[in-house]
Length: 458
Ligand code: NDP
Image (cartoon, rainbow, N blue to C red; front, side, top):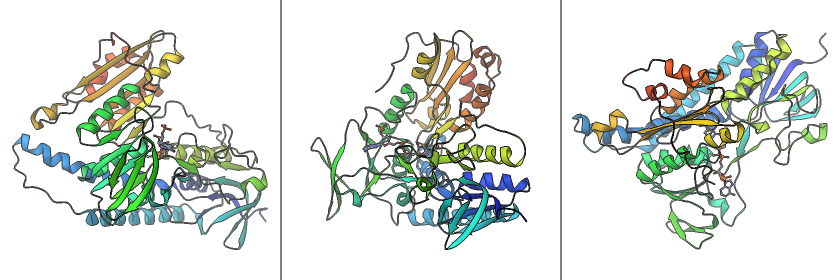
């Protein structure tokens, strides 16, 4: 008779939880996964996937506008928001079913309800008690907003993905991934967008040249970015909302969206009671094996609030399954994780920013290219692509690649492999380009930036 009901009990059926559970199941472990909402988690249901579908939808406005330069006559296109939302929801339903089927086929038992951990080996869900040798916490995070008067009127990205109608005027607060992505989405569909950021530039932590260039391109597209601005209060009025800044300005909008960060879902899980330590933001503390301060309890993904990216959560969870159930100890490597921002135009980035590299290395070389993509010559679109390569001058190793422009996420994924392999600038130079493409710039940049570009936007 086994000592516990399950070898692994996973809490949270998002990308990390599902991937780790399935991997454990494939090695013969007896696995349960518990979910209080729909199967799929933030990425599939409230984040990456629906967001990207809306990004695709929004990009058609560019295609219609650009077509004339290539000889097309396009009568003014019309757009129906409810049709797009319905199509997106249908796709999410399909994906949820696929997730459920994958769990079943991997012999992972799905338990629906809210889990509370009552001791190191016991979980309660909907009045039933389950025991497990190991527990994996993969409960993700949720949007947070500051406590200001009128904050009850605002929406988060969760609601933005499911609006009954497209707002004519929207104020978006925040300068992170979610804010810039939704600014691009709503602008693409024709909304008037005002983005409010409290710093001088968007996307703190990204390469400064990209931050500045993205803001320029967003402004060119008609997005109003108000920098160094904070919101004092929000009032509901007859025709929407009035947003008052701390400088005393008033902005009118049909909708106010906050994208001011996310917090880990740890409240009410029973973690403090059983000795799982968390930081002051409620993120679960883990060691390099993803182990919490209770040795048989593990945590992955956004609930640990480190690199909050779907592929990272998946890799962390699979590392646990390999270590525990395949006699193959794997530590997650968080170095050189590539990431993308699906702004318009998008960003792809991997490795160190120029500023980080300057701090880390004795001397660096910076190569950069700013050019008009070939498509824009005929379309007439006034938008430029930016690419940067950062090199450690002593070893010649490429330590960072950054791009703002069409297809940046697709291009940078391949470069991430080169960086992970320790490629040198010489090896980049020896690589033959694909012509004509934008990507070939990454292997043809020869001129070092004469003057170091501006450091630290703020
Ligand atoms: P981020 O942490 O990326 O950005 C939060 C933004 O809100 C920052 O600009 C921050 O400013 C600002 N902010 C925070 N508090 C306040 C406040 N009180 N008043 C005004 N502004 C404030 O969070 P997001 O919500 O955009 O995204 C959460 C996470 O989700 C990301 O970090 C990312 O890991 C993940 N994600 C990844 C995506 C992708 O891979 N493409 C897409 C979407 C999300 P400041 O810089 O001054 O702190």
